[in-house]
Image 1 (cartoon, rainbow, N blue to C red):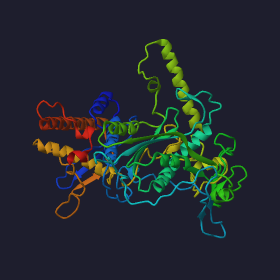
Image 2: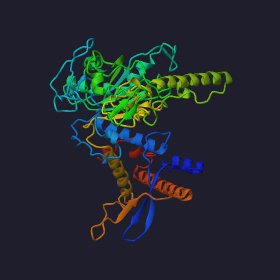
Image 3: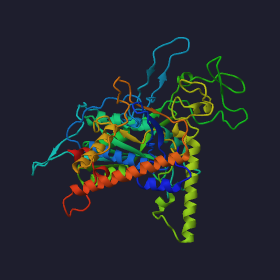
Image 4: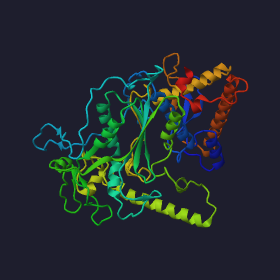
Length: 537
């Protein structure tokens, strides 16, 4: 439930880093019989939803990026996360999307046979060199012959997609000739292309390449990838991998929509008698996914990277490395469609000249129209074999089930995402050896140590934990969703959270100041500026 009817309360909470849209839970103390309302931050990563939570999420990602980038020893392999064990499922592993890049030779309906996948290499792409992969993750060490000092450089990569037409100020010069269809398909399959890139990179680099990558949008709204990579890889190898990486979508043709919700007959309908979708007019069963992909001689789409490739070598602990981390995480709080605004493009937030205001308004309108045209394609094209949009093209989706007549529910088709509905942050499993939950605990431990060193006893974070028990072994605290919360009560809880946050911040600032040498000025806060683990060490 958001803070409604009190914009002032919301503004104050936002200014002090307090979630403005918390979930409220009742906690019953079975020992005393008392009940308290506890606000749980919404945890949104989008500033359009909740600025404080989005900022905290971005800072946590910055810490995660720093901790794993310039390691000199291999971190432990993180076990695969158990579903629902971590509230941030986008941190489970390196990019792992469905592997549907080959021809599926499926079992027929009557006579079953094993399923195989084509591994043939598409013409026009170079064969990639292969190296025996070692188990290390830190890359090569270079020794200065004069000083004997060892250097273990890392890298910052930027990968982009190709051109779809001339662009000026972020919008096509000629929208009619701009290849929106290919741009949309590239965006919808971008995750699979990135996955192939990391697979190929590891085969060619000779070690278990670890990365922290962020998917962002260029001004033209095409996705690109920034990646912090641990270790140094020859530039020629990276360029060869980028040029030789592709994703071939062996899907049925998507050139013509056969059905549309807006036409007279409507979309295909589910027929339980045949357990499939049928033509709304004739009742004829639509081809299954297996039937539609059995005899394909070419993929419906091939996604590749563009020629633009940026490679930088960086050393840990340098200003350039710190700037790269912040640049990599710069837009994580924004949606793909909301990454750039007319003010961002012009470089001015205020334009007092009426003539310039008119120009800015025209650019904003052109940019909105560009988004609309791209969304027209991303909303109806399929995002994968199981996408409900396949019904538009007269094909049943893979593993079809009832209820797909209204299209696909993937966020990729939403206007905010413009084809990119998956994770915006991709982290390999041996990046830091920790989950986001563990990174969050590290930062809390730093704050607790600073407070305790100043003689301040921090509040027990587990004071209401369900793990606390009564003498008979049963849980002392029971959490439940309240049946009804009055707006006044909700605002009271927000106000209490705000007072608590301000008190904690004042205590922490005082503790940091007390720990700083006289005359040194305000200390750099571990929560705001550095890796928690590094400071704790």
